Length: 112
Image 1 (tube, rainbow, N blue to C red):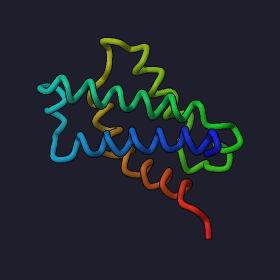
Image 2: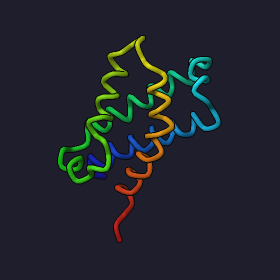
Image 3: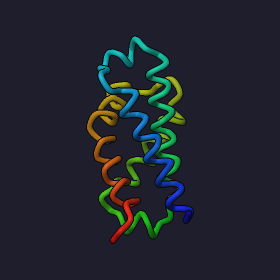
Image 4: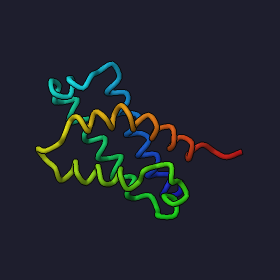
């Protein structure tokens, strides 16, 4: 498996888990369920770290993925410690993760 494929699979696995963990949940659940919030934040960190490892060539070839924003989110989560904005996290979960999953699945899908 080429290295970029490995990183893309890590992104996909973590993003799918974010969607699974948040299914049927609400923004207020992030406040009341610390385990949920910590799990989702950690998974978003993994998505971001894996995105940073994808080669520049692959990132350029797939501009539909907001690589810089994903990496920046990872950096803010890793270095933000206790300043994580759960409104932003929930927005990423509900608005960005489904599209990211679809885009990465499309990249990984074998071309006929």
